[in-house]
Amino acid sequence: MNRILIVDDEEILRMLICDTLEDFNFIIDEADNGLDALNKMQQNSYDLVFLDYMMPDLTGIEVIEKLSPEYKENTPIVMLTAKAQESDRQIAMEKGAKYFISKPFSPIKLISFVEELSNA
Image (cartoon, rainbow, N blue to C red; front, side, top):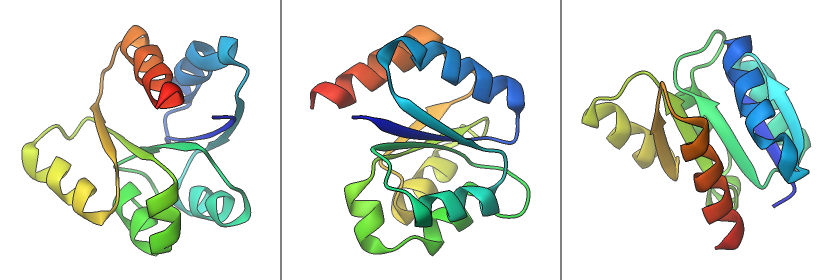
């Protein structure tokens, strides 16, 4: 795993994720809205995408809906959200997210999660 996209309209959260993962030598790109995220995902290949559920321009769900089936199959998408209801999780998974992490989350949990994916 080399390249990660972090998509969240909250700058503080993007910084937290970047700071948490900086020791792993990933190439990290950021987007602060759904439209920018979609453009980056269409232009670049990512090994992992952290995608916020609720954002301006396009929601995380709308971003996933616009991706090709191949992209969704080959790129693990982790939905990050404060929307922790089971119905929200189901919608995200049905649309193509592979994982679902509720906010707030522990940086230690995030590191463990990324390490687990890297070793899979």
